[in-house]
Image (cartoon, rainbow, N blue to C red; front, top):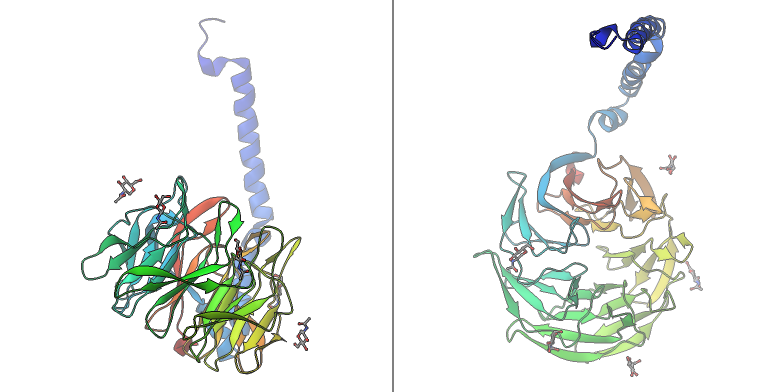
Length: 400
Ligand SMILES: *[C@@H]1O[C@H](CO)[C@@H](O)[C@H](O)[C@H]1NC(C)=O
Ligand SMILES: *[C@@H]1O[C@H](CO)[C@@H](O)[C@H](O)[C@H]1NC(C)=O
Ligand SMILES: *[C@@H]1O[C@H](CO)[C@@H](O)[C@H](O)[C@H]1NC(C)=O
Ligand SMILES: *[C@@H]1O[C@H](CO)[C@@H](O)[C@H](O)[C@H]1NC(C)=O
Ligand SMILES: *[C@@H]1O[C@H](CO)[C@@H](O)[C@H](O)[C@H]1NC(C)=O
């Protein structure tokens, strides 16, 4: 027995014969179940034939709303995206799979390619990025392995270099940044070491310095801030250590004061706000204790009142919201227990949401940028516990 070849071994013979029997069985089964095996293809054909009766449905089935558009050089989530004056999109920082990132990269809409540009001086996630009127991009605060950050940096698009500029008075993350009509940048709230901030500060791009500009009536992080057409800023929702908020307040840039305005119907944190072309502010979704929101509300800056508008089909938080060139709003992804691949359009005239086709990737903690060609660039985020490097484009409204 010891000198037998391996294939003469009893067990090997048994396994060999079993494999042959199994193969024959699978082949016969494949022939018998041919119909079922090919059913999905037939189904696809049937759908195509049926939908080709109407132009709209043919468009839906044959032209997906989403196109993959290369991968970023680094997988990242809770990063930022800013559309530069030259039309390119600057992506900064975020959390990679291993670490906080100092890298930044540019997306070129013409070539649909990603290239790295200068590294920030400090790695950061949960920071803010604002395009200044001089074309530079200001990033502020955030968090990294060292803790909460007070530092801010400026990106010069003509050199691709980041330089540290004045530090904020307070370190903070999950704060907001808004470019005022004066060109100054208003920073509000956020959290630092489990302490929630009520204060706000102003960055002056001319002197590159920070000054305090009053305190909000409530501390808040994970809130939103929107610059109204009258130049005031409405700040709403968010959370403190113990509460999620429905309160809202107004910043007056001339008086540098904060005053309360109407409260939202619902408490929300980690939601989104978009200013519509009619001057109203649309908020949607959000995180709230045991359940997530699918509701949406409109703020009227003239009356200072919030009004319920149509519900989204899906609850979501840490999603994105972008105003399209036709004035409607595109909402993408986010979380509802799991990352979502669904996307919906808000029709401003009917105040209803329409589901569009799903993104190629489910993702939350991603970014959305409206390009100068009208398309919307989606980048990164998290899925299945891992940061994503993938990016995709929502086709322009004009090609609908
Ligand atoms: C950026 O991060 C990389 C990797 O952590 C590091 O090697 C590099 O020195 C950092 N660059 C700057 C400018 O801090
Ligand atoms: C910013 O934070 C650093 C490190 O925590 C600290 O040394 C520095 O004094 C702070 N700067 C300001 C302006 O508070
Ligand atoms: C802001 O918070 C500080 C403590 O963090 C508190 O002393 C101050 O009264 C608050 N300001 C307002 C306007 O609530
Ligand atoms: C909720 O919104 C409706 C209008 O949509 C308004 O009449 C009502 O007062 C609001 N309720 C609260 C508690 O804010
Ligand atoms: C809403 O979502 C559900 C579950 O994902 C889906 O089955 C349904 O088709 C959606 N409805 C609309 C109107 O999009």
